[in-house]
Length: 180
Image (cartoon, rainbow, N blue to C red; front, side, top):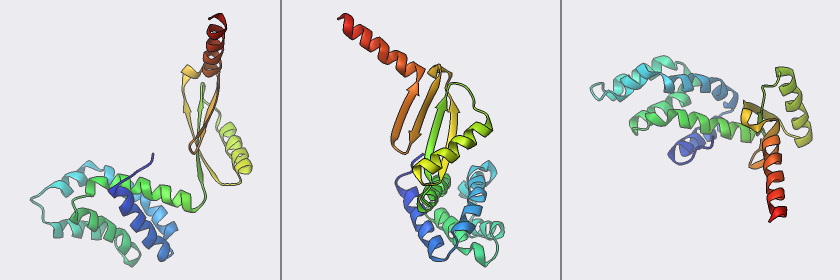
């Protein structure tokens, strides 16, 4: 999922700081914590409560992310609070992950099948794609029974549709075209 706008700019700034300070791996570990924080309804209620002063909210963030190694993570969270952008924390995390994958040369691939694949089949396919593309691959699989059979492979912006549904649709078009 691509993120644009303000959330992407916050993610780009945080990514630049993390990269400058050699903390990309550290931030990657913290992204799960940040994601959980952005999805916690109690935290959301606390942050959005206008009766609670900003200083109290900042103190909670300081306690959740203590230590000098967390200072840039805290800075991002405080900035989102101060600017009234806390609701965009999840989008910032998504955009940061995208930047991290891009930095590491990882390509996103989505595989849609008519039936679920075994984990060993998915892993074998991931390895083969990584070898053919000469890049690390992050493979997501989904199941769509309407495909009837075959697969749809989405690599970046390209779509390779080898589904039975598409083949039948194309055959139908050819038959209708030939009859006309």
